[in-house]
Length: 171
Image (cartoon, rainbow, N blue to C red; front, side, top):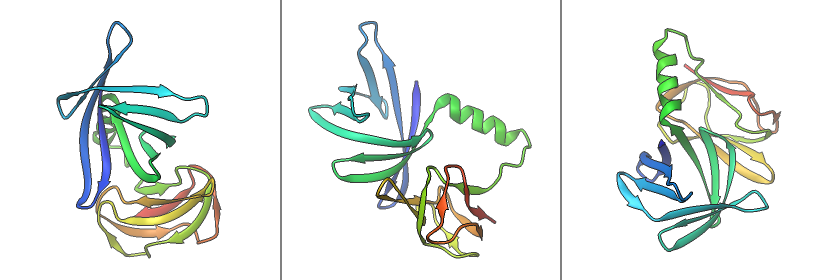
């Protein structure tokens, strides 16, 4: 299965293609940007993952639900977007179907709004921080997926939000 992985980077947002399959012996076969990668994955009892890529092993915790995920590894946290080829095709079909997709940012998890980083009318760039939510004693900065203008802010700092609550609308 082909996956499109979008990561924040110093120069903005970058997208990478990762292909994953399982061979008849049950081993993962992974290719990154078309090049084979020696990789393995083990789910640990505490819910975290142990990932081996080449000779390097990373223990990581994945938060949220695909396609929007928070990944914590080696003390660093990153918000990533992981779309399967099927999910991407379904989203493209939905967009072209004439349905007006709501242009809003929803809370990916329950938590408390710590800080608003934008105001109504602000023009933001892809990857720019918009709002900070605290969940499970970790602060999570939610970022813009693409360039946009903030239309309306639906929450205030200090507010408790449930997963799926509307945080911001885009103009």
